[in-house]
Image (cartoon, rainbow, N blue to C red):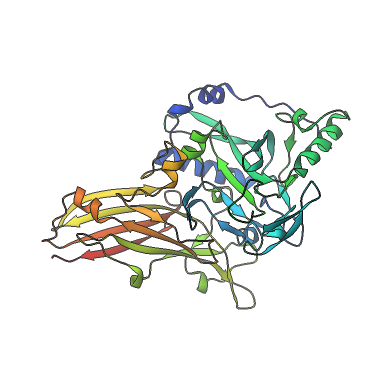
Length: 419
């Protein structure tokens, strides 16, 4: 039995929390965050946050096969959404009845995910337990042995993981935990918030579903996110600073997964693929586009291909040439929020049709991750592109590991003929 403990934020962190408006993540700060997290997990390996289908803790390589939505754009039949998290669940299209905490049968999608155990990904302080419009939400605060630095050079030694849509039974579990560790039968879960530290892999909650889903059948799943700065539950903080949770695990290698024999203790590889057949060059009046795929996995010991979902896409760097000269350039970067309007959730969720942007295919992602990228004709007009001269567009597609590891990107060339 662990003893509860109190953790007091450092003066630097407390000061930063009062000036959240001035926080930024630029390229140097992002590299600092990645380096610090990767250094930390070398000595403190992360635990995949969702229990294995057959029970028990699962490896992160196995676990990464079950997120069906990852960090970034996603599209439904009625709306688009920038998703700053992973949605993790088993057989997301399956439908069945589950018994809710009130004893009533509820029809949900992904029923085999319901009440699966949720594990602390790292040792972490129980920072918050809150009821939101989408159900209950738990936040853990994690302490780093070495700090990372923001764009102003300020040091931070904390980061936060968030677990959403947890079942109400999670509060019963935490209440019983509070009574056990504090030896008081009158306590509730609120008495260990800010006091109890979970070990990596310890159960913190159970999977539930969004109780307010009305237009579709609710889906039982875990929404898991990473936020490096204080105020991890504030909308502005989430929109500006939430990062891809893949940064909490060792990176996949970069290469052809269909030719890669993974060692027993190793990890798979992934590769960006842009099929030339999917490239649609922009014209004077019509938008252009490309289709990006991430193929990931490895060849198993029996010679069969073992796929893995890998939501590692992060950025586009676009350069336009016209008449033999560079005419303009543009960047879309999810982590740095380049090309995004983070002033509100509505602005972040909707594509700005005037500028280059990612465009998600409708529905859940399969074993091969797919994402579109749009090159608006009106964007070329803003830079006075002269269609009487030949030109080209160079696009560099890169992952979350770009800038930290070499070789995690691909170049695409789109020739533009003179008209």
